[in-house]
Image 1: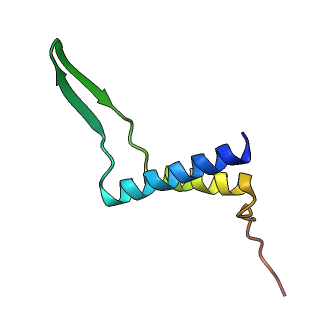
Image 2 (image 1 turned 90 degrees about the vertical axis):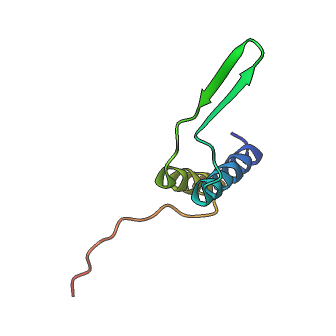
Length: 75
């Protein structure tokens, strides 16, 4: 992926997280048409999944460093 594509994907993930947290993201959509009704269902992403995606996009962009493992320090 190019840097522009990663940035666009990160922005989309951030927007989805905002919509999910504010309750504005639809889970299922149904509409009626002249010949019948149609329905669409989306799998809901959790906040943890969206935050992980944003973290991975930031790592690809070099914005945030990956977390290092904690190591004990003995004196």
